[in-house]
Length: 143
Image 1 (cartoon, rainbow, N blue to C red):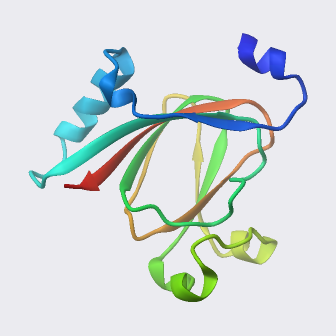
Image 2: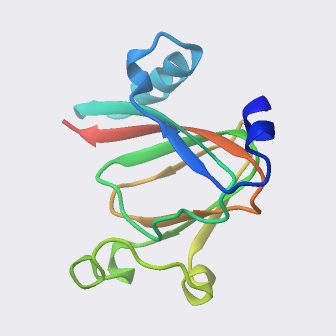
């Protein structure tokens, strides 16, 4: 809370990466989620995202991991699209956010205490009303 107060009205976003190495309650919660998955070999990574931006700064994109994200503070809307909706080769992986794209997306509103999952083949972008938000993310890379 105090961090967001110090930032004032500046728009920003930051990530705290590789939290799987820290001994924390967050790590233990995320490990419990990972243990419920099928026995495939995964290389989990835990990150936290903080920000007050209105949409993901680098646009609509895909990750190489399947993702579980948990809301900690604030509200964010996750917009996703199937793999066939965009051409990775043609669009270069980062597609600008337009009203037309958002209108055809599948939407999930993430609030504190809620969990959302999307597989690695889904395009996605995050939008918000610009209020401060914090999430924890468990990225499951196939090992």
